[in-house]
Length: 78
Image (tube, rainbow, N blue to C red; front, side):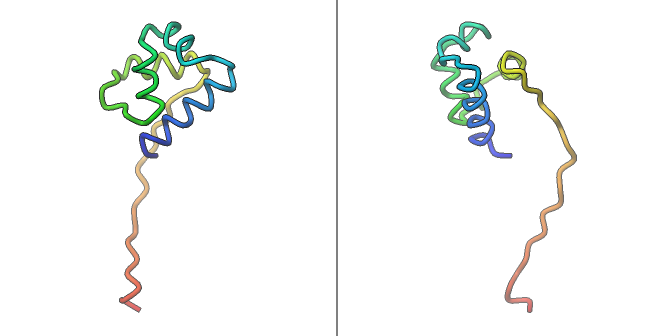
């Protein structure tokens, strides 16, 4: 999953809970600007601790899975 996809899921969950960015930011102890970056997928500057607080507040959890193998298909090989 790409960072922007994670951000979209956070944004969708926030809206489902009828929370503004400012309200969620206040609940998790950050700024609205930082939360905005997180929702846009710019999470390289967001701590794991903050990320987990956001997920917990939105009643979401992080699930780690084994990486699936990527098989490259070259149509020229046919």
